[in-house]
Length: 411
View 1 (cartoon, rainbow, N blue to C red):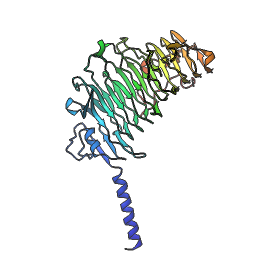
View 2 (view 1 turned 180 degrees about the vertical axis):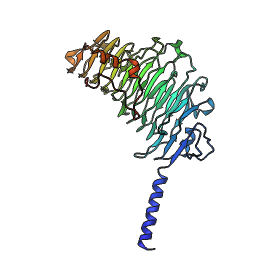
View 3 (view 1 turned 90 degrees about the horizontal axis):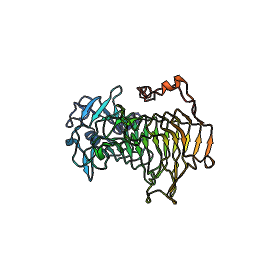
View 4 (view 1 turned 90 degrees about the vertical axis):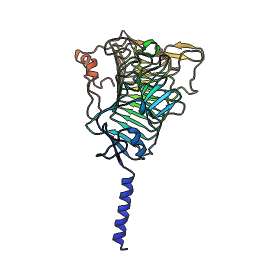
């Protein structure tokens, strides 16, 4: 065979291999799981698309409403019902990507999923190297009356990316991580979630975002996320055995609902802690979480709360306005089983304004403080930019948060 012909054949083989390694699949509300998954003949479910997809593939999800039912539950395991279960992993540099079609919004409605005696996990992601982009989840239900929780997106895998997701108007936690390393939650929103069914409807177990990694589960980051009108806390990382990073996130009016009812704990950012009972499961090395560039406004309890953490946290360039307590640095001595004013914290370039209490539970002599402005007075323009309707305004097409007049001068 002439050299040029051999070279051309080799290029064709390489191109074919590349195409085979990066296939596209399609899902639509009017699709059919017996179809081929093409743009013209899409699948009906993400579960079917997962069976077809391989590392490096993209599953495009058309806009519209996907009405989920009990018959679509992928797995019933012990006390859980995993409705959509993503357990097939991609690979490093070749994730499996589940992405909304550009300019469209797929909404997965779980209001009809009510498995008796089971906790509902709308999306259970146990695989790794998976990306979920541009999906909305609504109507997640709770059917148990005792202590329980349902979840919109539950992560136990590693190297996953959750981007521009919306979790709203349901009874479940928005996003919940219990295992896994190096996961990024980017520009996601959780709002108006409340469980009126369990524990007398007190709403004390429905956070916007929960992150509770086990030992060795490092490198988890929340960036540009918002939580509001969740009946418990906006962001909660109690019992986290490894450090978590929160960047440019916003929590406002948590612990209350859109209709004004006041319910659960209502902290904006509940960072750290391992409980206050005589028995606890704290790791040998206490994790040092980082909260930077975040915003807490008009939450029922504390804007930023150290939650009895038995060590220091880095609080850098945050703004708290109008919370019951803007910054609560409470720590705990685990060996003595007693709470202490905050120690070991790095508190730098933070601003506090308009709280019933600006700062509580702080031992300044045992912390590193610089550049903070506690008890600041904001201008009328700045205060207006922190109104809930402005903070909850639509994001940019790229997922960027709406601007506020206060800007980044608090950094």
